[in-house]
Image (cartoon, rainbow, N blue to C red; front, side):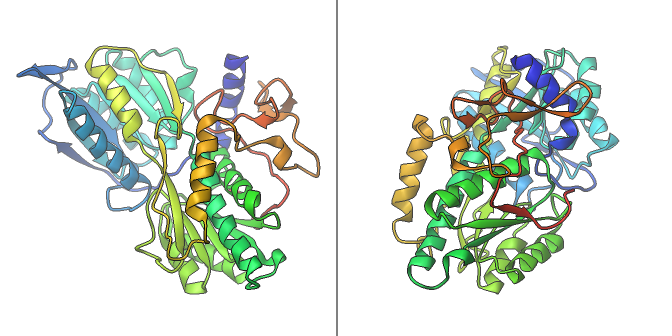
Length: 421
């Protein structure tokens, strides 16, 4: 059953997409310059040295998606050094989701990298063209799903249960709105969230649904409007979308996009905001309540250590708060509702111990009815209902069959205000 749902989901991979942006290309190697084609970790003075390539769709200055990967890179390097493993990184910046990604993978392989990490959804197809020619090198496609079911032992997928962090950010947002209702600042029907979404892919839908359910758990009257911008990283479009949502009466803004403009637009409009990939309090101190992000250092440390020691590692890896792979950014207690920190700790513990399932099917409806089946994809690429798949034990089990999300249901209470991309 597991292989069947993975194959079915893979057949419909066009519906999945993960945070990214576009650009040209450049390379940075640390701490040493490139050169050797040797793919066996070296050992000097008792310490092992491994060469790792990282292909990024943005650069370290984007303050969002790629910046978060670089934070993971740096933290993993430090942790591995304490274990006697020195990591030489060769980083390629601003690589497009096109043939330049294939070239980047070849270049890193020829430089002697033992492990090559691709950080964008659109990179995987190009990575998979290169991996068969370098069977001794391990290739990772972050935020993807094809490598989980291919027949290549040297390809891997990895993601994290970011929907857990989204749910918690929603709790923070919901508490703020309920406090405003209780204080008479707004009426119950004015508790409206505006969400800036990049694309109508499963990971975006999964994220904003989890966020809404978190908010609804503490503010029952909440509703949400989603505005898709058709880009992972378009600062102007994201800011304009947030402003349009504020103009429609949204008093809380959140986002699945790479830039800080939704935060600044929310602050300018007098609305509140929760972020993604980075702490945005310094950008919008009067609006930004909290954010959530994936801590990629957890996976990087795991995968790099395995390669260094000549060990196998998971072909498809996914963890969340259970391993610290999903974390929250600092809470802005200056503007958060009273009791938010305590509530946040309570709900996070429930997620940790499994007593709270984010997609508990008793907490939402689809077209007025409780979800009892999930939408899978058959061999012809058509959507079909299959009660034996992700809905069981009273919940939709996101990222259970594969690391990449597959929740795509349009639940009641969430309005898509423009055409999906």
